[in-house]
Image (cartoon, rainbow, N blue to C red; front, side):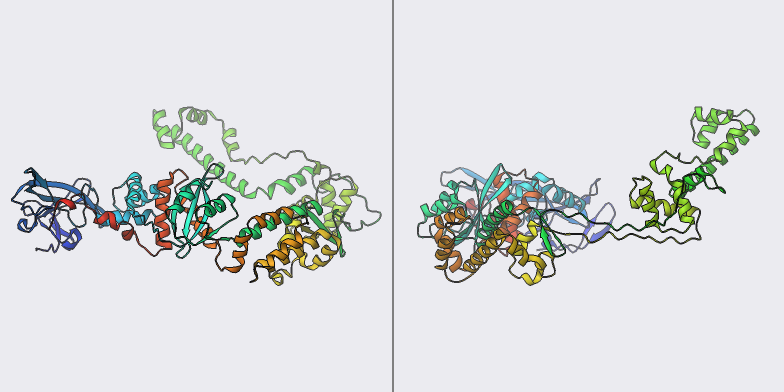
Length: 619
C-alpha cells in the first residue's frame, strides 16, 4: 500500500502539511486520476479511493462476487488541518453477487473510520461529542466553527442518540431520588448505581409507577437508598418486598431541623438583644453622649465681614466637588473658541468662500456655520467662560455661615453638630462633616480638621433566631465559640425553655442516628411520642425499618445528591428545553465519563462498529 508522505495543494504548488495516510484509514490510497485542491472558501479537499481485493470477498452465504458494477462516491468532513475545514472524497467500488433466489445484489464494503451515509468521519464525531459534553449544543457549535469545523447545533444534538446505553439487569444496589426539569411542573425519577455513582436510568414522573416498571426488570436489586418519599417506599415494597431500604440520614436531620424551627418560631422572637449582660426581646434605646456646647456661645448666619455669603456657599459645595468637571468644560470651551476664531478668520481671508467647503473641513452643519459667522466679538469671547452648576437652595443654607464661623474659631466637628441641632438643624452628622471638609479644602487649607465622632454609647448586640438554630445543630461547637450566640447561649437556655427542649431533642436524635445501636431508636420514639414533635415521631414509626437500616448500614444517599447536582448542571446548560430522552442521553454520557471512567469513543463504540451492510458481506 502506498503511503502519502505529504499533501500538495496545487493552487499554491507547495506542500502545506505532512499527513500520514493513516489519517484516512489503512485501506485508502491516492487516486492518480484526481488532485487535491483548496476551494474558493479556503477548504481543503482530498481524493481517496477504496480498492479492496475482489477475490477475497463473498456474499453472506458464500456467494462469489463475480464483478464490479461502477463506483460510489461520497464526501466526508474530517478533522480540520491547520485550522482549515477539510473534506475527504471517498470513491468505492460497487461489488455484485447473486443471492439464492438468483437476484442480483449490489453492495459496497464499509470503510474503516467512515460509516455509511455519514457526512463526518468517526474521529470528528467523537470529537464533537467530547466538546459538547459540558456545554450546550449551541456553544459547542460556535467553538467548533472557530476551529474550522463546519457543524450546526442540530448535528451535535443528534449524536447523543447514538450513545450506547448499558442497562445491567444484574445490578444489586441503587439510589433513587426525584429531580425536576422544570421545578414545580415536570419531575423525573433518577436512579444511580450505588457502587460507581453513575446514573443508570431517568424515568418520567415521580409517583412511583415508572419505578415499579423498572424494578420488575431488575429483580436482583438488594439495597436501595432513598429519601423519605412515600411513593418510592411503597413502590419498592410492592415489587421487591425482600429488598433492604435505607433512609437517608441527611433528610432525617433536615426534617427535624424544620420541626425545631417551627417550635422556636412560636416561642422566641426573630431577634434577641443583649445589653450589659441581659437578654431582652425589645430593642433598647441607645443613649448618645453628645458633646457639651460651650456656654455663652452664639452664632448667626450672617455673612462673614471679609467675604461674601454666596461665595462661601458656592465654594463650600460646588467648586471642590466638581473641580474635574469644570476643568473638562474649560478645555472644551477653549478648543471651541480656537476653532471658531480660526473659522471666522479663514472665512474673511478666502475669496468667494463656499459653505460646503467649510462644512466639510470643520465637520459642522450649515445652520451651525451660519451661527458662528453671525456671532459678535462679545459673543465669541463669551465662549471661553465656563458655566458653573447653579446652587440650589437647601436647608443647610440657613447654617452655612454658622459652620464657617465655628470652624474658624476652632470648634470640633462634633461640637458644631451639637450646636446646629440646638438651632433646629435636621441634617445628619455626615452632612455637616462634609460641609466642614469642603470649607477646609477651599478656604482653610492651612487648617487641619480631623474626622471626629462623638461617643454613641454602648449599643445592644443582636442575635437572630437563625443563629441560635445554627449553633444548636453544630456538632463541633468549638468552631463557633467566638460568636455572640456562644457567649450567651447558656443564658438563652435558662430564659427560654423551648430552646432547652430543642437542644436536648437534637442531641438525643443525633446520638441515636449516628450511633451503632438501631434499638435505641425505639427509646427515642417512646421519649418524644407525646411531645411537640409527635408528627415527626409518627413519620419515623411508619418508616421504622429503613430508618434503623440507616443506623446499621454505612450507605447513604450522599452520592445521589451529588448526582443530582451534576444533573442540574446538564439541565441548565441545555436551558431546560430538552425532552427526557435527550436529557437522559447527555446526563448518562457525562456521568459515564466523570463516574464510570469511560471516554467519548467508548460511548459511541457500538455505533462506530455497526454497519447496515455487515449482514450482506463476508470477508
